Length: 236
Image (tube, rainbow, N blue to C red; front, top):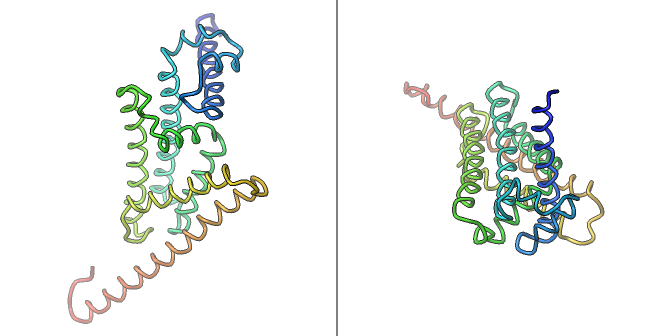
């Protein structure tokens, strides 16, 4: 590795160190109460070093959320490719695929997800510049568009019942994020395994219901085609 390459690697490592420390402090104290000095102390660097890479706290917070959005987008694109390649054999498989993807996202980087939730739930956009808010918002919207597109494609492939993709994704998000909030905030839950099992059970119940609906719609379409054929009409 040459000197230039080493400098680039050192810079990248320092930025990740700062962002990791910032995620921990933002999650513990919230955006408004967090100071750059606290982040610097946790990262064991000077406060001035942070300003070499980030203009201010707003810029640092935004960089974390944008990276999280991009990280989720990569997994959604991979998920969409799996669908197109026929890796899901039923609507139930598809629903549980969403569960596994969502849980992987949470399990690998829980602080980023919690910070994003806080951003949405606590109107933190009021603390950000319009430019940064628009960048974060557009990243989130793009992920929603991909998620809805996945459901629309599954419907076209007759792998999913005729449902509104917007509402389906909203339900998936509500089940996933609702379970996370329950696991994080409700005192007295036995352990992380209990939360994980509850989350999987929620998606399992969803998958069975959606699979039954898909089967019912398919049966209805088949019967309708039979009637049309008997009457000499083209099938649907």
